[in-house]
Image (tube, rainbow, N blue to C red):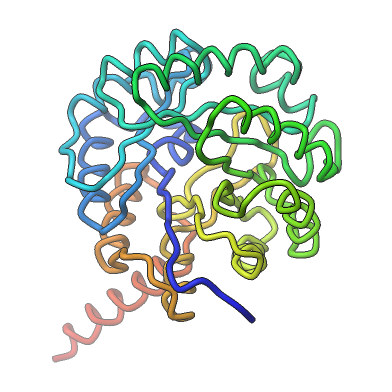
Length: 310
């Protein structure tokens, strides 16, 4: 098995993680959480979204969050933007990078963006053009690259058509999302085999949700095929408001544990990351699902019990 020696983890919890929560997290708590994440060794944090608050009310405070965080040297602070108005708002907050987004399937694209795939391309091109004029890098998200909650299985060829158009626009990286978390390694291999015939591996990041517990297996298959950038979310937070049944992203702590045990460098401190996970768990008010948090929680409980017997 040929594996990379170094991998980049892109933390999407403050955006993708919180957008699906029913409880609004206070602005200062978001700021404090991002500040903790900034101290973990992560060099990329997706801070928020400039989608209209009507659609994502949990992130209605995006401008205030971006203006309030402590910015660490070497960390990219990014935001999701849906259109030119969202970009204009993001630029006033000194965002380092923006992401545009669409789906590989018509059903999810219409549900998420209220447009067909063909209608979406001109909107995104306007955003990309204006962002690049402002010397701001643009990343692209493609959702439902394995399957769609409305249309069923999505072919690699359909994903390729969308990737082609985004690459033409000038996005520097395309994050491929298994939005409903149903993919398995053979499907990931089929998808990447198709895409890598046309594009270099460094164009792509993988964005796995863990609905069926296959996210880490899919990461390993992606590593084998030369992918070195992965999106993840602290505590396994996440989901999609427009994809029924989609659960959280692969947990950053679980991903980090696996990569570290495989001697793959990330530059991220596991202990600091888990502390940030416990912080946001307390603010959300529910137990998060990552295995590393569960282990740490049990160890802390055991230490308390041992202290009581001394």
